[in-house]
Amino acid sequence: MTKILVTGGMGFIGSHTVVELIQAGYEPIIIDNLSNSSIKVLDGIEKITGQRPYFAQIDCQDKEALQQVMQEQGPISAIIHFAASKAVGESVEKPLLYYRNNLVSLLNLLDLMPSNGIEHIVFSSSCTVYGQPEVLPVTENAPIQPALSPYGNTKQICEEIITDTAYANKQLHAILLRYFNPIGAHESAEIGELPIGVPQNLIPFVTQTAAGIREQLKVFGNDYNTSDGSCIRDYINVTDLAKAHVAAVKRLTEGLQKKSVEVFNIGTGNGLSVLEIIKAFEKVTGQKLNYAIVGRREGDIEQVWADATYANTELGWKAEKNIEETLLSAWKWQEKLSQKSKV
Ligand code: WQD
Image (tube, rainbow, N blue to C red; front, side, top):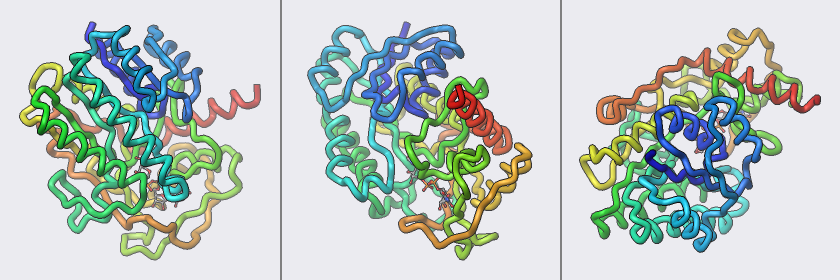
């Protein structure tokens, strides 16, 4: 079976991608330092797929441990690299932690790939590299804007590290996936997002407010130049996003890529405002949300959504799930978490 090393494979997007890899006939090898996840995620993956993939608790900053797992679990056909610190606000407070973790982890992997015969890597990037695009929807050719946070800067630097390395080493082929806003949970409600502490992102805050864990959702601003004044984003179902990674792995391992480094926007192509999300959530779940409009959040861009045409045509991938079923999946997952916490 084709082995795929999945770093950060116990995380939100990583675990959903492991499920889709298994169901597509690949053998995922998971490494994760569990700094932002739980070993219980393996149980959820097993419940969904009937298989319990190999897992080792490894930090990608530990080069020796990485070498050992590549040697023991090889031959590995491709790497999907999720492992990174990803909280925008935290990155402003702890820049060195973000630069060290996110850059050293990638450098270690790229260093070790040639001697372990690994030629393909899929990198978890972000639409944050575009900043506030001049033109919407945003295509892969849009200019990269100066990062608004150390987190966003690490994504830009990692893209450049991969591009320069692929230029120097013709054996290296990479696909950079620029995610828009990943939300929701697997339809089984066996895996989903596990935010630690107070959620920074909108959807977990919405579901925790509806579940009574949070008192009130704060909507950060309604004075933007949008239809209802609140910010617009491209919210993509996490299972759809996971399937984009399988499509990328397939393209690389079957030698179908046309350039040594390819970049794809992974979004639905639809923009929705915060207030539209709230209305849709209330409609599909029947839950009334307690929210208030407050001031803008520093660093927020006004509006961004993807032109995903290139991924549609070249990767043969398209988002399939609509916002209603996606928000419902997030709510089902939240209800499951709330039940577990009462046990
Ligand atoms: C979405 C909208 C907020 C919380 C970030 C990262 C991005 C990616 C996804 C990793 C914004 C509003 C939010 C709340 C609110 N992460 N909001 N009240 O900031 O678009 O993207 O997460 O790759 O890189 O930048 O996502 O969910 O934080 O915010 O009104 O309590 O919801 O202002 O308009 P964001 P988000």
